[in-house]
Length: 332
Ligand code: UDP
Ligand code: MG
Image (cartoon, rainbow, N blue to C red; front, side):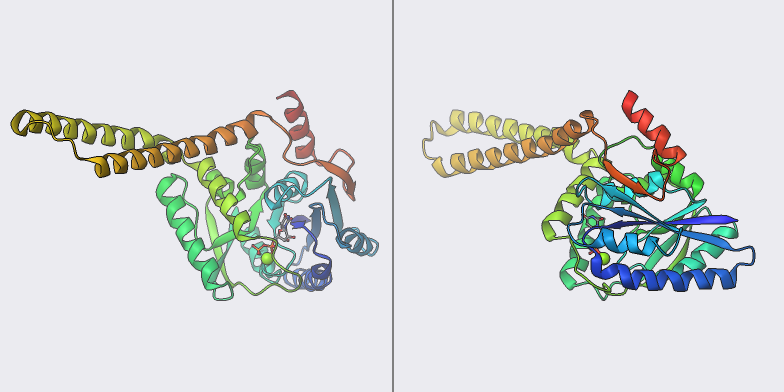
């Protein structure tokens, strides 16, 4: 019997667990109806340091079924880290990362599973319509994708999020990437594989509120660009070269002019403009260097991406992948 694991990061989602459970139970019925041999669906929650009753609600769901597991992290590590944990520990033949707030409709999973059983290695859920997001969010998202895709070789598909079905081979490829800074959209794009698509309209959040502020999204955008493009780092060579050449030409012009027209003292305004402009450019360049140095810094520390407090419903050391990952991390 084929097994599909839903990988669900949760952070202060006590109100969303109930509706999610109802949707999953409906999905189980649908899977049983559609696939004769049956497909086993299990849910792997990763509690990302919630301070509300999220864990209690998941544990009380666990009392009624064996198909729900929970990994409790020691603190809030952020969604990317929580998702990394879920992918490492998930044991299914296919894994579906999904948000608990029903913005990734579970009903779609039946279609994804069908495509997978027919041979697809990767099924991406594509949003046909983002009209539920605010105008500001939509336009900043559009600018981000444009900037990222013009700077980086790995192209991020614009209307695709983390919601997707990945065959075991894809999950293993994702888990094999050793970096600690885990911008999952980029990592998913990097591993490749051939996708097929299912389309959907992204609904609004079922309950609770989004934990992504403008600042958090900004930091994520910087992380994605510094993880997948060196262009901001290298471009200073060319900017510097251009400014030096212009300065050299200007110097020649001044020397020639002095020979022809004699000494010319005024020029305070152009001097000041030049100094301020170059000062600004230099600080900007140093700032960009700082972004990359800080990402090197966080990589070389080789700290684990997340720490587990307890595992409910998984073997104590985690799955086979988790075991090899952990020993790899220890020896690295
Ligand atoms: N999430 C998480 N850790 C965090 C923030 C969010 O695990 O630090 C989870 C959250 O519980 C949800 C998913 O990530 O299941 C998506 O979060 P959210 O709905 O807030 O993001 P949005 O839909 O606004 O992008
Ligand atoms: Mg959401």
